[in-house]
Length: 298
Ligand SMILES: [Zn+2]
Image (cartoon, rainbow, N blue to C red; front, side, top):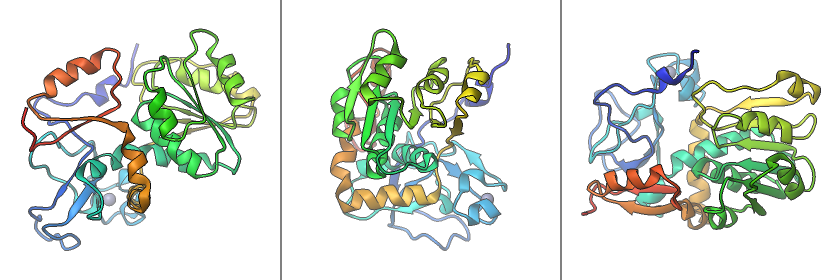
């Protein structure tokens, strides 16, 4: 059996951390579009800044010397690509800046869904990406947004982010979702990323509906293409974000959205506390997004 897992393994010594904000303390040679002292949120990509994709504001498709996952923000200092950072206003906190990245992932998925006003939506998975999709789906006209998870631990978070209902069925997840939505959903956002989730989404969505795949499933999975064909479904994979998605998240936050969006942050910890937090996150947890403050003491 083959799988894509190998491509997502980081080499030894790799510094984790791709969701972050910080103050510009130094500029690389030739950088003219940024200034020292600026507060910025960084995309998790290195971009050349000159290829057609970069010039379109889509550095995730850079055909120059692009590197996805580039960052290493579990540190006091990190390197960011000057062409892939977006200024944040003083009204936003560092915490706000650090969650722009995952929220932009959710927004990008919603952007690709082409929602119509009044749409009925199902979001599978209640992590930061799923909850970001909830928030932006509501803003973009969905009137019904049901969140489906495997437990009720994040029910309160989902409802605060704009979900109209939350379900955690123990059996018949497809039937339970259709009942909660009030019919087959027009769009399903799959943000669980576990084997079987995509097939379930294709089964749940209405004929000629749309499934947006936001989940990261890096092992072999199975679905029956004929079932999707019989419903003439649109299956849209969503990969990170555009510069415009970052800018829109920051704009929404600055116009008052930050209070609600920072709901996904359930704790901010020090580096010293981080190993224990990672251990806690291996099991069932009420956490959603845990942030690291490099200045915090244990
Ligand atoms: Zn480029």
